[in-house]
Amino acid sequence: MPANPITPAPPVTPEIRPLPREDSSALLDIDQWAFIDEEAERDPTPALDALEWDRTFGAWLTQPERLAGVYAAYSLDLTVPGGSVPCAGLTWVGVHPQDRRRGVLTAMMRHHLRSVVDRGTEPVGALWAAETAIYGRFGYGLASRNLWLTVPRGAELRDVPGTDRLRVRMERVNPDVHADLIRSCYAASLPLRPGNVSRRRAEVTRAVLDDQLATHRGVEGMRVLLVEDLDTGRIRGYALFRRKAHWGDGGGPDGTVTVHESVVLDAAAARVLWGRLSDLDLMAKTVTDQQPPDCELLHLLVDPRGAAPSLTDNLWVRLLDVPAALSARRYAHPVDVTFAVRDPYLPENEGSWRLTGGPDGASCVRTKQDPDLTLDVRELGAAYLGGETLSALAAAGLVEVNRPAALVPAATAFMSPTAPNCRWMF
Ligand SMILES: CC(C)(COP(=O)(O)OP(=O)(O)OC[C@H]1O[C@@H](n2cnc3c(N)ncnc32)[C@H](O)[C@@H]1OP(=O)(O)O)[C@@H](O)C(=O)NCCC(=O)NCCS
Image (cartoon, rainbow, N blue to C red; front, top):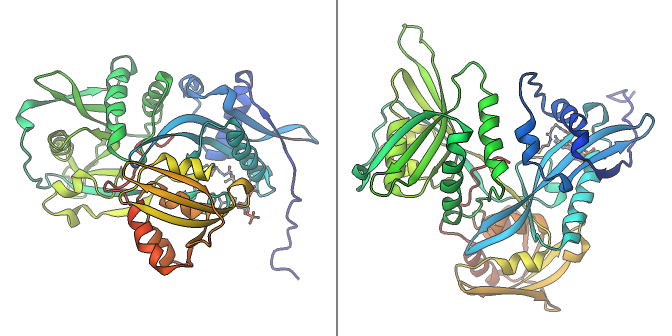
């Protein structure tokens, strides 16, 4: 007797075709099945406005004819070491549970990867993974990390000069009032860190704010803290946050502040923002789960261990056009290395490539030279933003080192002095 007597459903070959906005109720139905996110009172209009409808697709099955899966792509700019690169941001991926594990996602991924390559404008793709075991098989590598911190109320922070010229505003989020302020501060922060992605269209920022307003569960509505420069009136940092009141066993206040998105443009803004957020009345702690591993807050804390730091995954990156992607970024040191790349989904990436370059530019061309390193395209994606090192991947056996002297210079050249991180979970 087999351990599991249930016969797996046979694989399917869905037809992938564009999903027009007229079909948005079918799209939302799949999304709600996939993400268990039925919010009857939630107005889906802002999220639908943010979609690029010429990049929104459905996977259709027959007998009966039905929509089994959906996905969409955003046209993003991804900050990379030394610049930025057009990037296909995969989003809204969902398959109806009755049709899962029959190849619907695989068909959608093949369609997505091929259609982005055929567009010819985005050498790189990126996504946030609902579950980390899903996307490695499609060539996405874990390229950046999230730091979770739980800061006890009143935790001591180091002083930073310049805070006296900043003022804090705390307001209820109102997209009409805050969308432009937040959009421009977010945009100004983009070059500061690899892994940042643009919110290219105004609708996207509105959708982020509207979505935050709609999803509070038993906690206060979304608030925004703005750090304003007294001299120029400009916003130098902001945080979207909510408080949840709770009274502990002894009757004392034990509330939690949850920070949903935070952006700071400089050290003084960071000091003011975190000083305020970590010392709100009736709160016992401030939780932030999307900080870069080298975030300002960790360094400002006199007792960083007291904030119980822990790491999780952030952005997954996929090189769609290996030579274009590798020559679009800059390298910390001069580099001259040959890679043999495996890519079962995009065979045009397969074979040997020679990367030469440094801090001022780079080029990547086909070569007949013996490869120094052999690796899956997934590992190139992991190393692409400069956070995960080729040497760590080699130590894990994921990069084969054919010429040992090549590893350290290549790994050093790929590294970024700023840890990559994406602030927006798109
Ligand atoms: C995750 C999801 C999209 C997978 O869709 P699917 O149609 O079942 O995937 P496929 O049948 O094409 O599976 C492809 C492969 O990925 C594996 N896989 C799929 N989902 C997986 C998961 N959650 N964890 C681990 N492996 C997974 C399958 O086992 C299969 O492996 P194989 O090629 O070795 O046989 C679907 O289950 C879903 O919608 N889940 C809930 C929402 C979600 O997580 N969406 C992703 C957002 S980033």
